[in-house]
Image (cartoon, rainbow, N blue to C red):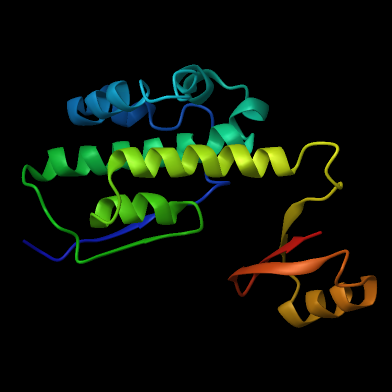
Length: 175
């Protein structure tokens, strides 16, 4: 078998209805989904994933477990499609996707993975709610990292900062 490398997406890749094709086209993905939504705190996710609305799906406490579940549905469908159990040569994930990658690599159990992403999403959502200081994160496209660093220095690093370099053309700023 050829070496397989898996890459899992992060938050902001979601859309209402994601994973529906896996659910309808793969018995393994469907069985996986039907099993994991029984985990504590995940029972509401099928309606949120399949029907939205987008504002509810994009809430961090919903989207983080939802993205992970859909990523792992894709993994179940891949195992089914290949017809063999395989060990990936490597796994990687962008931000939240790292949790699915750790599961796929065998570093975390399914229960550990789902517990971590559920709590991660809850805590991140809670941190953004009043009475916490107003703040947020935004992806800035088309400005050089050096320009954003200069803007942050001018505004004050206690108010805004470069949080992540996603790619040369996309920088995450938070504050």
